[in-house]
Length: 289
Image (cartoon, rainbow, N blue to C red; front, side, top):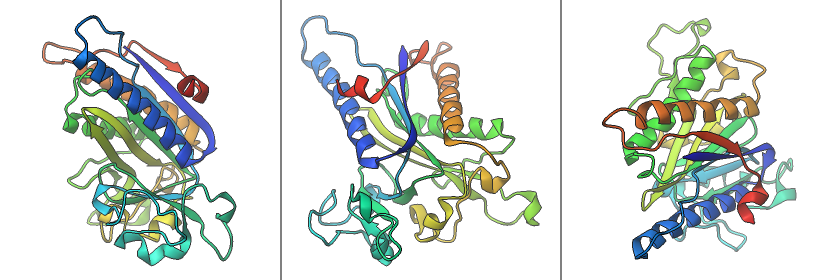
């Protein structure tokens, strides 16, 4: 099995990436239907894909926080927001508002409802977002194993920077507070990566948001991220790892993901998944053509 990797090195429209993700999931679903309906040999399935990018400032809601009226932003001037985002209504604008962002007296982030799991979170500059578009059955993954694969891949990336990643009963990946803060060991860990996915007929979409710099922290403080009152976010930079780019973290995450797939799910008598033999780069044009 080959794994395609699409990486955007510059800040990219969230809407643009969401559309590419939809294209890829539609192709996987179409192939699954073709196999189910066909009486003869079918073509091989599309390759799984990881998209890594840094979006423009955007607050997203998952299925647990969707506004009651719809699953997409209203076309009217009044956004339909979930209760979690009502306190920051003045900061938000519908998708692709472009020039409205970053005004001193106007909205500074887009709002996007999504169908991923979980609640409200933030994505933006200083963060590496990775979306995995996969057929879980082909990779030998249950839904729970898929989440654990994403979490463990993040833990591996953190370990490569000398940090301990924690997987707890709360969603996402966490890190203990640095010892330099004078913590007595009783303080709660801080969240460094959000995890939220969507599944349809075992085809996955969405993924993780990994905080690299401290730039996203102001945005996180405006909300109760993921519905966890009193819990704080942090980043590699906040943990004392400075000078790291989102591009570097994207590369390390893809490498960790491949190692985890091959070591945990594609080997041994019990493992049922296919091994990833190659990772190859693709462009946006490769997907939309």
